Image (cartoon, rainbow, N blue to C red):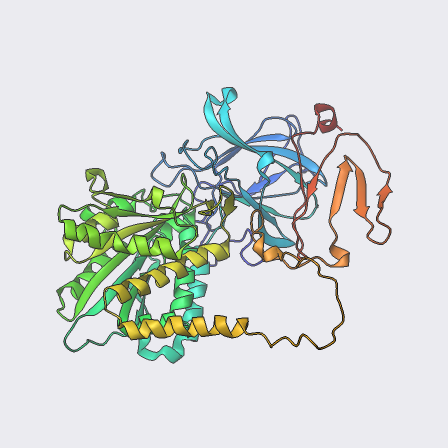
Length: 564
């Protein structure tokens, strides 16, 4: 499964950083070789985070998130594996030391952890009815995240995480592939290292677009920054979706590359990502509070970016229009913008134009969560630093996307994000940028009209029908409802599924230990009587023909059955 539970080649074990390393939990009084069911916890791999495990009883475990290095107050990201499980072993995991009590686990979003296993690599969300977030008297009245799980296969490694992980080596592999794919772009694509982190990892900078000066006007520059905070893994998917569209042959991409120069930093904090921190660097610094007082020793990535952009700021042939710092929010749903407020009314109006255009492009955008301020406590953020240190025509934003999901504008249902839908957020940013430059007449109107006309012609062409000959004889056929494709039902599963085959019919359990399979030929249920109890236990199976996890409702299992 690729990087499943494995460290990278250059880690030298440093991915551990205080994480548990193949920790086997034996019952009290047991010695000798571990038996099946003595769970083995591991987080000593890239992006891993789990600092301590306590065995409460035969089926319950207290898990402690490892704090950020040199910053013990930050504890939220978790990412660990469990193996040496027993078939149908039932457990309850309690994550007991979150530092962020207000989050989507107790909000209206009802966030849930994700899980996968060795033979089933697609991430799945644990059902909401099996996840609890509440104050615990046994843990000094602190908020505790508890979730129940049943291991349905032996010889499997089960992987649990807060949200979809995106590691440093995955980013390096993606950038390496880009260099191969973008060979035909010539000077329109460039990858360079503008600095090294404290642990000597490169800070990559992508330059995409036409870099030649324009006669009579200035070349516009858009700066994109991602992964300032290591635990905000969705930002890497947003950035990847943006890059994939920008280097493509799509008409939106070609128009933007022709007129705009993009400067993209895909991973600002590779050290923090590698060791599995939530918010800080390897020395405990929050980079999004240090832009105004960055130092070459403590914040080499920030000083390198500032020096690079300052050269363009001083060059009369270029104008930096945007700095968009991408973040993932742990307390709110949807995507939204944090911006600045100005005394100049005209600058304020210009500043809110891009968020309005983005709101028209994106179904997940929530304008109610947008905020524009000049709070002194945010002086070290990228959006505040660049709007004060650089020209007054620059618009700097924090683009926020939820760690969990979003609500459609016409519904209150929460739709969880997937890796693909995070990438769609990046594509929406590019569409909004194109519309912005059309409105401000940086890109000629005729060019953007060509883009719209092409898409309109495709729609009209698809709607053309042959003329109906009323007099012609035709056989009467029965009209049936069109089947709903599972790709459109994206509430709980992140994989793009296809309709079930006959061999993939879902297996249900109407009672604990009694298996029932639907018989489509006779319309009746064929039952195997292997019943051990009468308590109903539902097995939730996603509609996909890919292998997937079996998740059993733990809430209705009685105490007597736990002892069986």
